[in-house]
Amino acid sequence: MLIEELTTTAEFRESHRVMEQLRPIDESTYLGLIEKMQSEGGYRLFALRDGPDDEIRALAGLEMGHNLYHGKHVWLHELVVDEPHRGHGYGSHLLGWVGEWADERDCSRVELASGLWRDEAHEFYEENGLDRYCYTFKLELSTDSPY
Image (cartoon, rainbow, N blue to C red; front, side):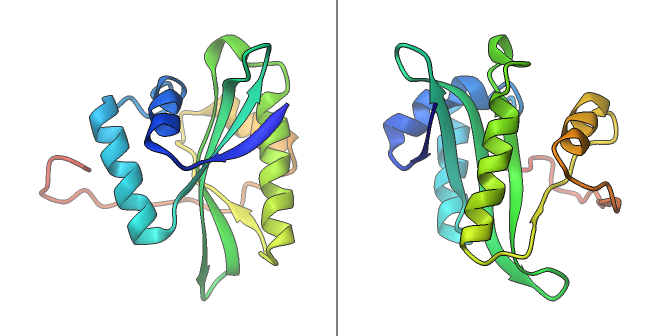
């Protein structure tokens, strides 16, 4: 297994087929959002590759930042494993790697939000050492598109 940061448009384009399993958006919107997120907040996308052709098996999209509550931390926006390869340890491996990556950069924690309906994801996170400790709230505004 190899974990690498994706940095080129070609790599982001390759990652779309896996990411759209979690975030169902068209490729053009996806590429534009990655560019915007990188320039605005330092978004980084990492791929776990495996198999004879080093295909992308899992992705982790994250930002490192500071706030008054956590200090220096990593916010994990996306963690997705390619559907045919779920249950083979790729998600656990990549999530563990994210924790090590954050720790090496003196972060206090890795944090994420997960939809209330995602029971299997919550079980996965708890099995991998994450604590369920709060709720995330949102207020819908007048703009129709989140993009």
